[in-house]
Amino acid sequence: MIIDNLENLMQYAPLNPLIEEVWKFMQTHDWKNMANGHYEIIPNRLFVNIEDDQGKQKDEAVVEYHRKMIDIQVPMNFYETYGYIPVGDLPNVPFDIEKDIAKVPNVRPRCYVKLLPGEFAIFFPQDGHAPCISEGSLHKAVFKLLVID
Image (cartoon, rainbow, N blue to C red; front, top):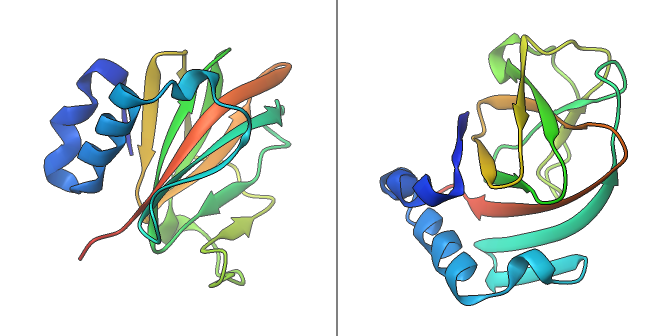
């Protein structure tokens, strides 16, 4: 997991070349004002979901993880807290291969981090994360990058 300010996103491009494509998209699109929806940036490799989510309490948030995708999550209107736990510490649960997600209820994250608008979190396949911990309605961008071997 990586937490930082958006202005530093390009520092992480050596970890996956699609991070540079996210940066380019952010520089060339009015992504903060896009309507909610799914936007393909590079078909089958990179997309962004612009969404509104209802904030949850820590005990309501569900830990999730992915195997083929990296998340770059960006709160846009309000703070968002994320729970974190290594996937290796999670119990074995069914994994939805088609949607590339496992949800692990009834697990408490090891720690929490609070992000403000202008900051981002990168979650890699080894990072279990519980998003949407906040008050009120969240407006956020979730960039999904294919893991490149």
